[in-house]
Image (cartoon, rainbow, N blue to C red; front, side, top):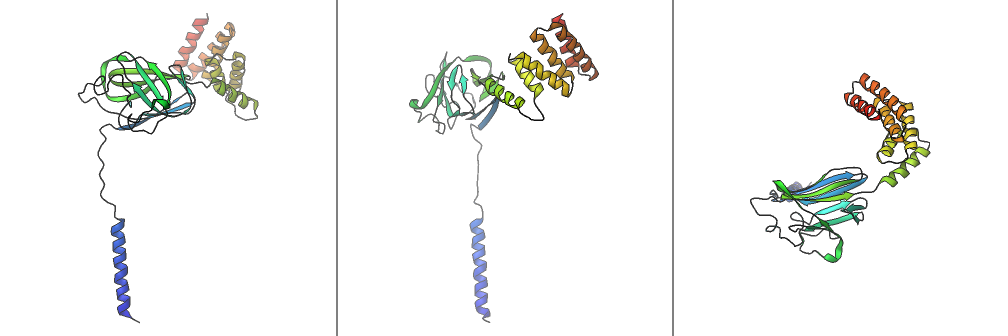
Length: 286
């Protein structure tokens, strides 16, 4: 056996392994904080998912609108990459229809009026390559002056309802509200009808009755479904909603009797909120 040859081979293998280990050693990495941190905002309105990806510059003792952000020029609406907005279904922005999709949300700030731009160029940096030909819509919005300054540029949702919300663009002492409207009632009615006509063992009787009441739909169907919910399990809140539905149908005496029963159930369950709700309903019907 050639021990000398084996020895050379062993040394060679060791060197190869050492070089391999050095090659795999991760290189030093450094990451600095962003001067305008990125932010992702997600909000569901009705059955529509909305996502906004944007960066948040700070005021930093600067004059913002009219200086850092010039009036009457296209603005990326934030910092860094153009602000991106995604709608999972069609929506309306201040009454203008926008198809489902991914867009750049840009703006043209003005002293008395802003233009909100929905543009196909969702992946662009800033507004340097903005192309007006790619606009889906231009929407007018009225800015509001705030009493207290907001330091970090902010996009937020508030006044959220089943069919609508407000998307607010806020920075320094300026807020620009944009009304977002979604249409889901017809879609949900169809889904409810399909489930109710099926042989499913569990059906959303209470939720369907509540939805029909809230949206002024077929109250006879709502009554039928709330009765089915109570037949499955009578609860202080399901009986209360039956009283509400009866009242909307104009069946005043039956509504009062049902509300009194719901109030008794709420008292037994120590649900003070529903005790008051039923008392108020009874008072409004007498």
